Amino acid sequence: SAVISQKPSRDICQRGTSLTIQCQVDSQVTMMFWYRQQPGQSLTLIATANQGSEATYESGFVIDKFPISRPNLTFSTLTVSNMSPEDSSIYLCSVRGATSGSTDTQYFGPGTRLTVL
Amino acid sequence: SQKIEQNSEALNIQEGKTATLTCNYTNYSPAYLQWYRQDPGRGPVFLLLIRENEKEKRKERLKVTFDTTLKQSLFHITASQPADSATYLCALPQGRGATNKLIFGTGTLLAVQP
Image (spheres, each protein chain N blue to C red):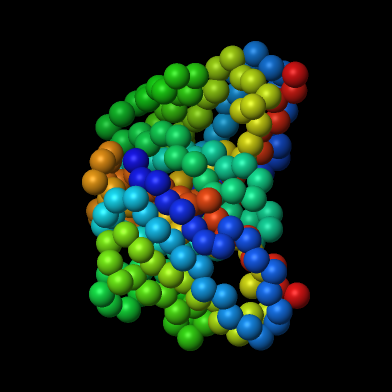
């Protein structure tokens, strides 16, 4: 399995500001993803973080709003830019293709709970 | 596109009983299906993966079945305990390729009463 940590675990931010969330994995992984989970909702995929190239965004999500970096096989960041209260959500880092276990199994970090005032 | 249906109503059961949760999908049969547990405010925790050629998989008190004819997976927790209370999510890949993205159901809330 893969052990994933996220920083910060939670934050309260002012409207119009930006927050960068970090995701660190304890082993090299093939794929890294960022999800959002709004209150009472299921998980929505924001983008796939590609190592050394631009992330692949899902419909409804754009790079200007959610810039993503993935400089190596164990680390990624997601920035939530120019925040509004509608961005209040839990943001989750997820990985697949850990060196141990099935390449199909997908693991999640503990999440970052963001509240925008 | 693929849709996943999980019972959105909470499932309330007595401690010691078997909980059974259902996951139905609407389109093509996926190569595998995964079940997760999620506690409030936390990320999902992987429980079990079952492949299309496996009818059943077990892990301690957990059992998952996969019926590609019915397009359904059942998730069972035997001898349930109050600590099993959580939301359980079903997930499957959006396509058949190795890199296909996981899509998730809305989850079923299980409440085990002591």
